[in-house]
Image 1 (cartoon, helix red, strand yellow):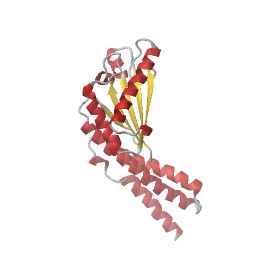
Image 2 (tube, rainbow, N blue to C red):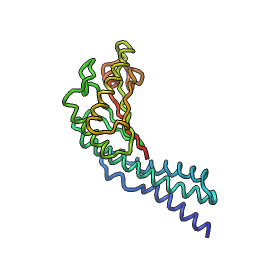
Image 3 (tube, rainbow, N blue to C red):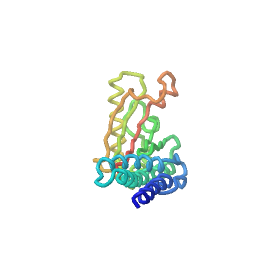
Image 4 (cartoon, rainbow, N blue to C red):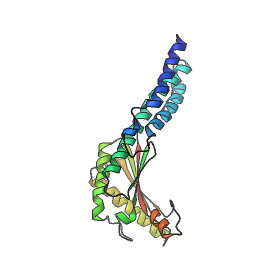
Length: 219
């Protein structure tokens, strides 16, 4: 009987990791497998936790923990898929990237869209896109948000650091004005220290001048 129960539980884990709270293909524009990845990661974490904390037999506790963890991970992945698809659809500017990393969304906005040269004042026409982002954050409140400003390597490093911090603060303030709770958001400046492209070409420097908004699920 115990072997039958374990087999049924294991089957439940396998089914969960395959189905994972829905078909991610229903959200066009997503990476398509983040829900399943979340379920698998959650199942692994839940299984480990079950083995450590369980009061029953180790085998049963591992499998039970895997089911609970897989369900939670699948829900997180499903929400991130849905939010990413909605943001891609709602942003009015095709230059804004929404990157789905499973338990985190990364919204990447080029500085040229947001600011004039050497300015930390937001361009009026981009405020609508930031309100779209604020609305999304309010719709999906179970996340923490990090706004990080970045520059290229031209000019003084200390100046670039200060400029990146002020630009991140401007974006964060726009989110606050859109109703996002202060406790969910922090603003950071990375200056020229985290390039995503070469600083040896104009194209690469343009990619490095950006603001990134990380949206990380809290459950």
